[in-house]
Image (tube, rainbow, N blue to C red; front, side, top):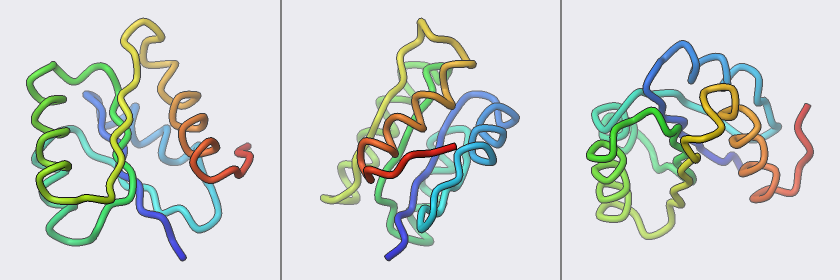
Length: 106
């Protein structure tokens, strides 16, 4: 069974790089930059996990959380801290997915 993950961040280049670096078997990782990408994804397929970078402004982060919780009773939301900066996004994503799936990542 495939797990669907949506990574959201302020800069698409950072999100795309993390998506490419964090490869797990049976995990389908998509990338986006805000609430509109979340809504588009939710319209196409169920999402198991949403992982957000800290670069998104607070209103967008709250909007994303609200949209997820209003549309799904099974999707989890994970928000990265601001202090670790953009370079902390890949380790955060890796830690969340490893913790959720018990699968080591490269």
